[in-house]
Image (cartoon, rainbow, N blue to C red; front, side, top):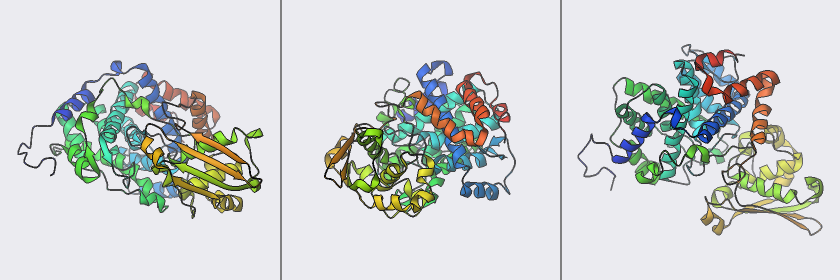
Length: 462
């Protein structure tokens, strides 16, 4: 039975929507714990860096040139480029760039990537509106909480990817909050944006289809459009979240779970940052590989000495077992490739996952020696644990073993702050120069002192 079957009340919102809307509209910046504000600033910095790197690729340079040719001008920054555009166009392009290298922040509790799906829209709107840094930070936290909580409360299907769905809600909420929407309009924005999710599929990434990167761009665009629609007087359905996530793109939605711990249990602090430019579930295998290499003098092996590599993992990681990799995008979703390229290169930078690495005969030969399989007990333990075993069998009969229990970057196994900062500078210095990248980083980390976010972007034009 559909959730609203037999319910003739088309106007009274369900209690959980009343509660979440009140929270989103009435929470003040002063109500945010210091650790939430700090995490939010680091999230924004990470998004700036990842989007900057994405926008340097040939495909996205071509897309920006074509897409903006007939677009109306605006104040919003296409990050890492000389372009300015209207908020919806900048948000769309930056959203695509945010996932191009698969280097974006995510949240396993919330089964989503709130940062890449929501921050690009928030940045674009803040620049268009001239929002203060405090209002911008608060809006990002509210958008993150809305997005992640929908994912947490939904029983998402394995075939549905983590992009293109609840990010529409996060983007819309962030923009609506900056515009000062009241509770009634916020509910319309939530319900309208919930129905604007796309029925994307996980197979796109396994087919190496880069259209998958458009999904986060869609979230920014749809969220911004949802706000415009509500401002014009259009309405959402009574319970857009419950219907969409209870019957359409998920197999169930628990409204009580969505609001559990609201204002106390901040999902913003429960996300992860990536230090490897690859699909999140492959990180369990990479961490296990690094644990194995840590037992080897110098941390390196001669790849000629490797006979085979055995990987046992939970289901979502085991799905990334493909070896017929033909593009740089495909490298992001192959554990055999990830382990092979790291062993050959001795590092895991963006260049280790580009087309030159795909064509490297040493990488291709070693990739063929990697076998990935699912361990049902490990699947049962997910998401509480991310169990993965890597065994490197050497030609002389020795076996080198490594294990991951919780992937690096998760709240239970966090990265050191200096590791996250290094990622920011690795990605931004080639574009901004060291001095300007440092200035940008310090400005982001001091956002609460910014009076007008439109002027914030003026100092970093290219």
